[in-house]
Length: 608
Ligand code: G6P
Image 1 (cartoon, rainbow, N blue to C red):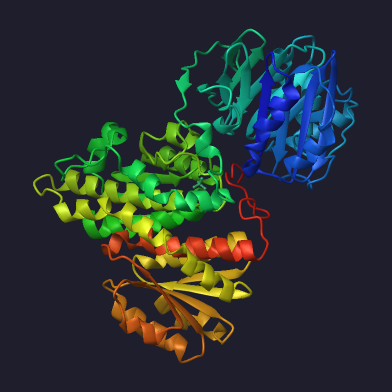
Image 2 (tube, protein in one colour):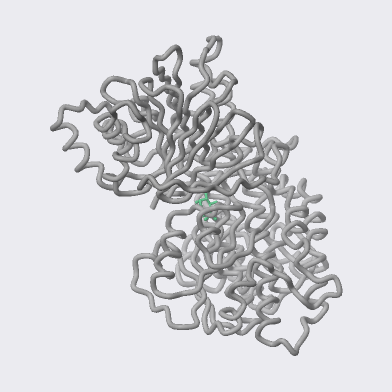
């Protein structure tokens, strides 16, 4: 989940690398480091903290270098210190390695290398790579890298340079994404396409067990077994403006405000204009399996798992397919039963989450058909699935997922209608089910215009130590998501519960200092939720309700009401989550938290 950028080309490499790595900071930011070759010598600089700290150390210097690698770290093995920051070098400081992933047999490799006389300077698993490459180096860097990698167990995306073979970068991938950026007479290797987008839109995605060798005039790719490979060069359609903050203070706020457009993009071209037919081109190859599906299992993590819960309710209610939603990390290690007719859906914004990927591979091993719902085009999960649906909402940079969640629900709704089409071909989708989703972006927009009202609420409750979120039916996953948003970025302890479960535990916590957010829209369980509100009120809790416009009845039952427009029950989560996203954001900002880079979290969790 760390960020990697490598550059070789006519421009001064340090500047290109620092600009690139800044864009990847969301992948990890506890330390960073750079290595480059200048006048035949390998030079290295590191800093603890954000990339700005590294930049400070290098500012004001003049560099004469055209090849280098840089890294921003999210610690796995070893604390975030200077010694543990990447790049890691060999005994003679002539080979430098940056790495994303985990070397699982590093203990064994390290003790063997130490016995052979190699001196280690860090606690990281990565350092073994530098020494292994040193061991095998006989004048050609790629040969040494390939020999070293054959001994390695685990996952990696690596980039390597050496003063002894100075005109090249060697990079390799197994389980951690790497993208080759192909410019005019310049090449990039990055763990995320956004890092090289300023320079080129032409990219090629490395596959597992593939190595690339970048030189000043060319690039080559081959398998780790030394068999040449051919890469399809693809054009990235995202542009750099799409990943800038667009005038907002934080990426998270920008992404919250982008939701109306993001949802339109997620629907574009997928609803046949005459209505009634959903076109999801990426599912064509799985149509038969989907039509015959007896069961759907959703695997996901974090916010994507919450979107999966909404899908469970929708698919069971509307398409009448049994659905189970599993944490990918649990699914992968338990011996689940996958009978014939099971379709597994992996939901992942990044498409790189290690647990989701592993769950998918486990399901494949047991014979399931695999469908992915990802945002990042060309990501590993998207490529390994048999078929899939992209969100098409542009990059999500804020660590706390916002627009991906609402787009996932949008796409899952379209998928539900698509399943209805497949299962009941004689019954056209009722036109109001189409109209209701088409009207969602404008309704999201209307909620966003009431942001000031949320700012007022945030001001009142920003010093809370605990917040409880309660919802039922389709709003139960929203309660979970609201609580997750708040704890992720404001560090306030928050819990989400199905409202009726409250009396089996959380009710004990309720007192005048405990704000309770009820998602109490006018749906099929509205009456039930009013009873739950009464239970909290009679115990002195402070009550905030997210309610449906026109519901005056609720006014006298709670302390504050935030109204959202009416929509169908199953699409309510897209609307009811917006005030919760805004509330978490404003409370966190008022508490002085860095919302785009919350402590200990990373955007893309590519380790177990
Ligand atoms: C991390 C992120 C979350 C995200 C989760 C799953 O924990 O901080 O925002 O929901 O990973 O990520 P995915 O990319 O698979 O949706």
